[in-house]
Image (cartoon, rainbow, N blue to C red; front, side, top):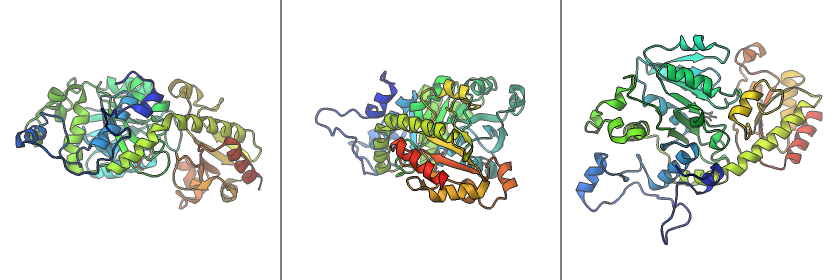
Length: 424
Ligand SMILES: *Cc1c(COP(=O)(O)O)cnc(C)c1O
């Protein structure tokens, strides 16, 4: 890990050209790599020497971006994958098999809930959801000897629930399992979960990390801190892997056991690989990430303040807004800001919210968040349109609720657009 500050790591980490080499990270558009001897390649296959064999498993362009993200998060290693969904899936399958279970916060991203409650369930892995209202004892009672990990999300999409890292890290570790955290909305610029006890971090790089709505991608980062040997619960890491000539990951790779196995076994077998071109574009996004996050945060806070004083607005939910129920947690874990996503309730219910959206000019209606361009979505008339008002409330979406993703434009233009749409 480099000793530079996070803003410097965004720009410089991961790729250091040698004398005469390209200053900018090259795109290694090659599936394959050339070796001088069969013996050397044999050593690569046995994981005895570092290097690239085939781009399904690793590639120099991806490796540079992986090293940058690992450095930004403060981890020992990272692995890029084809999407955020693939990152969540592989992070779990790496240490959980049929017949076992995981514990997850109920407020996590809806796509992750589907993956856990429907698809993992079909694969024989059960998910036990816990809520922030439950006491420590109630949460602990959900674990059993077959529980393999605890899964949370730093700043939940779209509920904006701030994860109480220290509380849940203590519970996970008491129960002998690692804490896995989806850090997509915060990015390592706003929060580095390893500093608060998380063991594994996942990302949808599709959101702020790319930041321009251009490439779908995901990443898993390993803190290297979890002791896989301690409870005897993770034989896939601590006993011989027959699919790799009997390698024992914890013996051969030490702190990087988890992330090495994720690559050499699961990326090899499942093939959810990111392309070199995508990694290159992602890296351009990462170079400006710290500037963009500061702007997203300051713009969103100004918008939240404007909205909370407006007479056409029923309520505003933004964790960094003083008076918000999560303000203290937000200050503790996200002192630099709470990203660009705001939920707002428009007076007049579903019809008023739809009208407000239709009158926006600068803000576009899209099914995306975390873009440089400001955008808006009305869940009740789009993603959740089949549901009645009562059903909406039951799943945590209110009829009058609009989700805003505040971009990096001039905040006066954003506020002017919101104001004309509210008054129209
Ligand atoms: C979007 C998102 C995902 C899924 O990522 P994709 O790149 O769309 O597969 C996972 N977690 C969070 C928090 C997200 O916002």
